[in-house]
Image 1 (cartoon, one colour):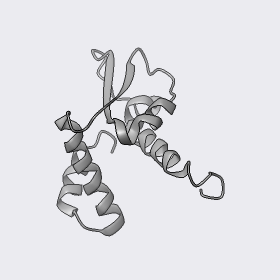
Image 2 (cartoon, helix red, strand yellow):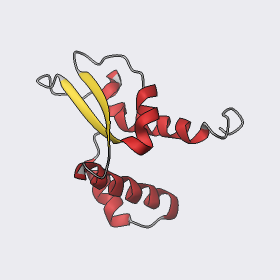
Image 3 (tube, rainbow, N blue to C red):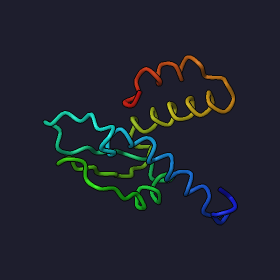
Length: 113
């Protein structure tokens, strides 16, 4: 990928791919499993890390469900801190092979299987 993207943009591109992968079960028609009673989905992202990828994220609407990407300061939103722990554990398991128990729990909780 480095052959096609400027070094300064590479982290942003990777984050954009990661954001798309995480949101895929919610926004791609072939994987949508949204209860019809849900009309809005709000996703909170850590502002320091995800502000630019969230502002770049473009998608077509899925059925009649609206997707809002909001960024907040993780120091004031405990849920984001928990998500950071989950992301760290998942990445460490994928790249280093440790955090296996946490990664197993996260695997069982995923939307897409």
